[in-house]
Length: 301
Image 1 (cartoon, helix red, strand yellow):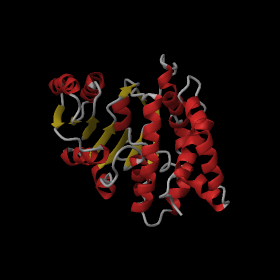
Image 2: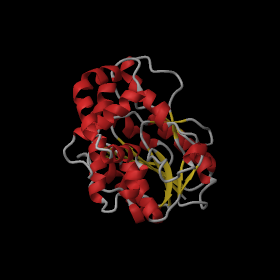
Image 3: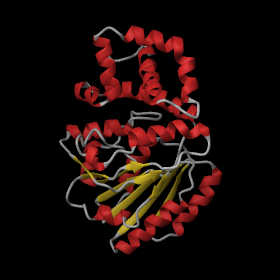
Image 4: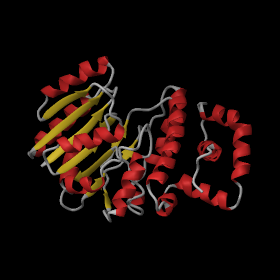
């Protein structure tokens, strides 16, 4: 009845998988938990392979990194049940009824998103503040707000989808690197008129990146946004739904992109210094993203 699918990369998944296995057993439904390690370091492969001893768990290892989209497609192809529950490996289950909460909604919708949240306590090390603050301010969205624009407020860290619906869209394997696979996936669901149902069943995101790495992945994600535009001929709705692209189109129309590019080039050092500090500003983070987009040559017209 339920296939729980987790792509694994350089993270200790033992507690997560044990919790999921125990909850699924208690729910008394047919289930499987499929784990595919995407060419992690040996230290993680050694400890994570032990999860195969748990009830319902199968564990596989890839020798070459497949990437975020391809490995998710492979997990779906391997699943034997119709209902697919995708989870990120750096998740922590926050509810004793997490699996049961999803089971209750099976049959009501083709796609169900449970949400994401972060620990309330600020991280001890300053280098994780930017990612934590961004998560709290931008990704930890209450279900009532998510439900207002269901196909826009979607992330792939914690969602259930029927195999039939998944095969209509799948993850686009042209997307390389990091960022916005969820944006494109949600957009493709919308094109197929598949509405996402939002429920209050979040997981805690544990895998905070250092501020330096988070900024690097932010730049990579912006480049992926441009790849998404190229993949989709009619990008108007996509641009409208992605705040960064929507704002860029507005300043481009007002012929202010040159000014933003100038500000970015002149003050990039000061902006980065703030973002790498213990008190990063979300205003500066938005300016950083917009300035970086404007600085790229291959942007949308």
